[in-house]
Length: 144
Image 1 (cartoon, rainbow, N blue to C red):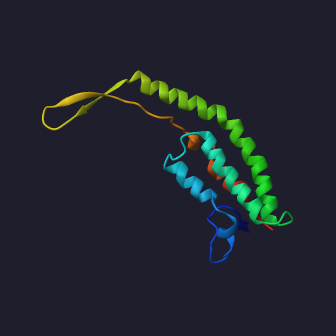
Image 2: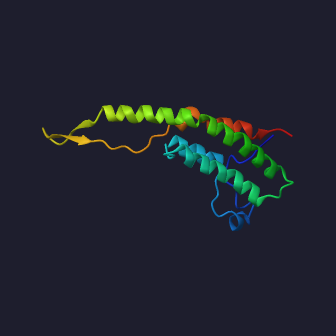
Image 3: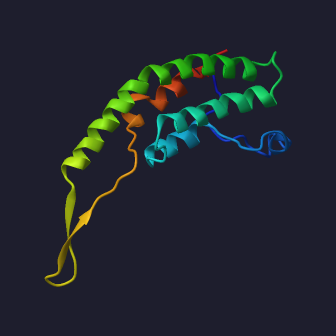
C-alpha cells in the first residue's frame, strides 16, 4: 500500500524537486491549514488543492503513477469542492449574520473600567465541516 501527496516531498529522496517546484504543497499541509482556520475562503482551499495536483503533474512524466493519480485526484476533488461550495458559503453567511446580530462586545479592562468595542470580523470559512480533507486522503490511498 502507498499513499500519495499526503506529506511534503522529502528533499533527501528527491533532491531536484525544489529546482522544478517553486511552491510545494501537500495534503497534510492543507489539513494543518484547515485545523488552524487558515483558509478564509473556499477559493484559497481550492487553489492549494490545485497546487498539489499541478505540482505532481509538472514534476512527473505523464506516464507515471504520480501524474495519473494527480490527474484523477484533481478531477474528483475539484468537483467535490465545487459541489460543497454552496454549503460552505451558506455556513459562512450564517456565522457572519450571528456576528452582526451581536454588534458589540463588552470588554472588561483593569479595575472597574469597561468599554464597548465594535467587532469587525473577516470572512469565516467552515471548510472543515463541509469539504473533508480526509476524503481526499482516502481517495489517494491505493493498493497495488
